[in-house]
Image (cartoon, rainbow, N blue to C red; front, side, top):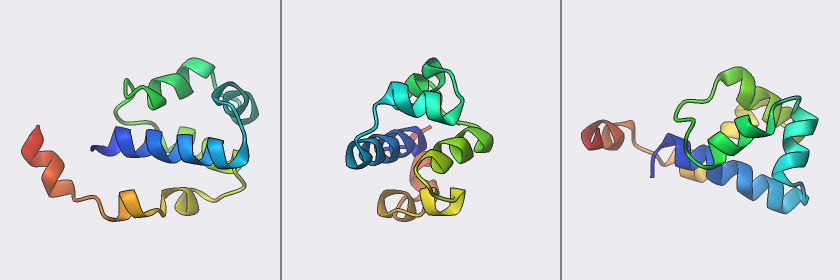
Length: 84
């Protein structure tokens, strides 16, 4: 699992728990649906902080709260560098 997979997982989990569709998330965040789709599908390997901030706001979270979850906290950057 890499960063893009982790972001996608986080967004899917939050959408499911809050019963928000990806389309609704994009609308509420003021983003194009393709932007969210690209993150979810792993096409966007490095989403902008501004994009993640907008997504976090939809869930009533700060960016730091959005990024504070076990999959990301347990992720080792060294592992990703080895796989590239």
